[in-house]
Image 1 (cartoon, helix red, strand yellow):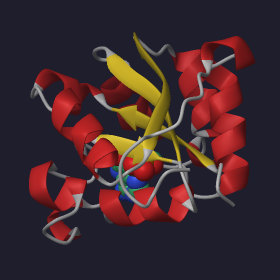
Image 2 (cartoon, protein in one colour):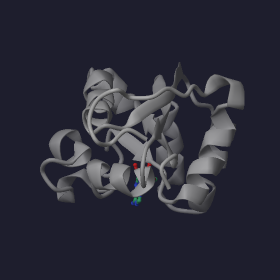
Image 3 (tube, rainbow, N blue to C red):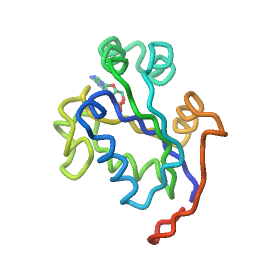
Length: 150
Ligand code: CMP
């Protein structure tokens, strides 16, 4: 599992509150590798593909409105068991219930303004990565520090 990949999105609230660097820094400090990154504005079609499992939910229209309201940062994070490691670092969906020390627990405001989306399984990571990134946009390199080089 040493080269697992997770898809991570810094949502418009994270960008507008100046937290891009903080989020990236947490992953880098943990020894994970950022192997692709892009700033863009999502549109409804992409959001429907990303959140296909939520399209029928009550909150979906609010989610579309929020997530398309400003630029986002899409990235791929790589490392051993990265999906579960990143999910633990991100914290639970509702920021008010997220543990201190997690990204949402330290910076999130609500269930919707929760700073970040991260893949919930290796399968969804690969699906989410393929929506926004082509193979030639993904880099690889070795970290020279720490025990966590992947
Ligand atoms: P995320 O992990 O990106 O996955 C789906 C997103 O929908 C979730 O974070 C929240 O930002 C958003 N959302 C808004 N309302 C709800 C809700 N009631 N339940 C779950 N997710 C919600």
